[in-house]
Length: 324
Image 1 (cartoon, rainbow, N blue to C red):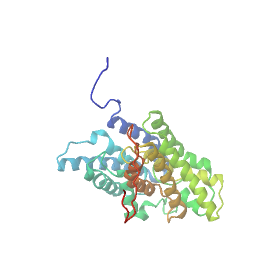
Image 2 (cartoon, helix red, strand yellow):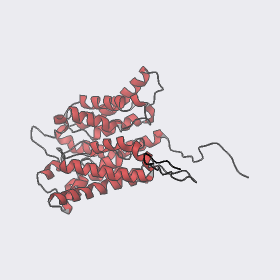
Image 3 (cartoon, rainbow, N blue to C red):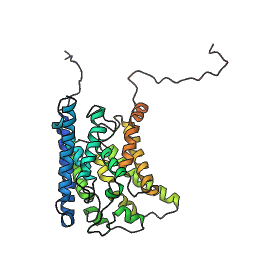
């Protein structure tokens, strides 16, 4: 006796709301550490930026859906996650209106105008962050404390300085609100991996290939390569948070296994090029955005053949000759 039913035959208890809530929970350690770390210099400002970012994303999504008379979807927590990721990438010196503009661009221009969650062709949070970086570069790269310059670890390494690995691991240095502590990021990443919210393929390939390509590029350029430098590149900046919380986004990463492998390697190559040859020390956001744009091509080229089908080879017939 066979039980015949309509598709889908593979069922799962996961829902969009549950997945997004797990991602939001995983982001709390790194954001919480950022608030604690910058409290002495900036007070409650980082916390205010986080709250404004989340509230703006939720408000813009709800407002857009009310205007176009669509069902309200803010209760799936996707807008909350977008707001948290935008906040992760903000410097503690940012003005209150910057997350508002980033949320407006990310939610409306990169998400809702394309049909909402599942239809966006790029990560809305990264779209908002790149919009702010391009529009307000000086403000987005300002980490000064009381008019005193506070260089990020990546900028310091560009100047030839050697970083203390324990300082990078714990997070006792300058940077964006949610990317200063490697251990806090890894706690959130472990939560996502244990809950099987994300697959380890893209994050691990992204991290390993970034470090590997940086080593290769520096060797080709004749620059010295040390273990300290490579590990510092891994823990500094937004590589870890980008790999685990942005590159593995369900909507904007490939669904095929081969596509995920190529995607992870591509992100590593782009990040390495931006960090070593680009005008700025960081490059994670731009690398992932470019990768998002190439995902449809990757999925098309790596799509598996249906069972029993053979790949048809195109034969080019020379002009003037018949195929008889």
